[in-house]
Amino acid sequence: MHQFVNSTVSGAPTKIEGGVRVRGDLNRSSLGKPLLTVITVVFNGAATLEHTIRSVIEQTYRNIEHIIIDGGSTDTTLDILRKYEGDIDYWVSEKDDGIYDAMNKGIVLARGDYIGMLNSDDYFASASALENIAFHLETGDMDAVFSCLDIVDPANLDRVLRKYRVSSFSPFMLRIGVMPPHPTFYCKKSCYEKAGLYRTDYRIAADFEMLARLLLKYHITWKFIDETTVKMRSGGLSSSGIKANWVVNREIIRACTENALYTNIFMLVLKLPIRILERIL
Image (cartoon, rainbow, N blue to C red; front, side, top):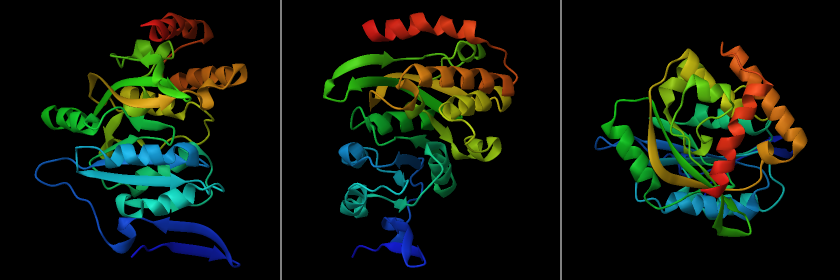
């Protein structure tokens, strides 16, 4: 039987919860396999959310905890969450303060050994993506892994617009505004517990600031996996026009400065050849 929990204020629902955790079932690490928490953030994402959920369900790696944080959608997102009630560990729908606030909620709720973000425009590139990620986490002695991301045409998912491949996670790469693709980044929960949550006073580049903080202040260890594990539909906050590019570049400079790494707008120009190569390779 499906179970949903509603919280109300003056008769109006403010919070709706569901998933197998609500009825008392918990995922735990077993047989030496790490529990991977996949956090999906969504707001009015009914057009793509089901594809995202199915890409998690179809993973060959079974020790997965899937948490979905919905920002109070008004489309049919809740219908999709209810449809996959038995396949989602926990979901909640309530108003939030934006994407990074929602990610923070997911991190606090996570019980996995490692945490990754797979938003509602993203999906795993293959059924073995998490199997591969877990293998490298199991066999290596590091805090995090990241891999390659394909950015695809929303109207034709077989058409790759850009191959996002960053094999180095270094202060220099951060200084020119290049970071590993965030949807491929899986990191120990204990690292977030030490470093803290995403900064909600950033509009677009809190993911950049988080990776800069983890690398520069907390010196996390990492490994690059030379394989495409996630695909992302083009679009989103950081690629929505000149104004957004200006904001993201200003926030990248701020993120570096706040993490004791000098950069400037002229250094950020150095990332342009990398972005061009990603589109032609």
